Length: 216
Image (cartoon, rainbow, N blue to C red):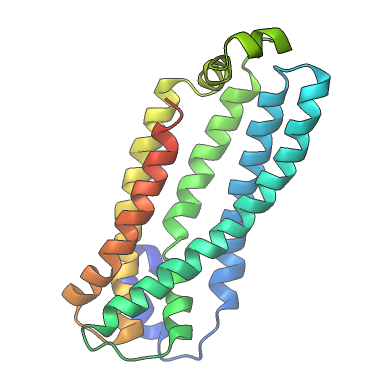
């Protein structure tokens, strides 16, 4: 796929065509949202097995809410990143419609989709084989930190760190794609496009790293 091997040429050719937001949405964003939301659901339902039935049912409800939130959240991130890139590139004399920026920004999530295709099955495989310790309501009342201990038993540090390394590589790859996306969507020099893509990518990367390290 030319987007992977030569993103500069990919966007150069794509900008000659009509804007078609549904293509990156259906081929990249939706599959990524499915990966993320299903993993959120699996993790929450597995975590609920540690608690008595009267508490576990609330986790089941939370799993559905979390799954929906994760699914919608990917689209929100796509929109926010596109807005920031479009706005920053305007300071460098960028020209072009926001629809084009939004379309091209969607393709920058391909590295995240590939990364999720690696990390999610790997994490699900490990978690599905973990024995969940049972805790009572009294234990939970006496030591609220027991919930974090259970979470760490689901996601050991080795798995968390490996996912962190993969996410750092994915973030750097996404920055490359988004730089060329802004270059051609906004008709600016690559250096200026890189700066326009750098800030939102760093913010996105920091959020991902924080989410992972928060599990430790």
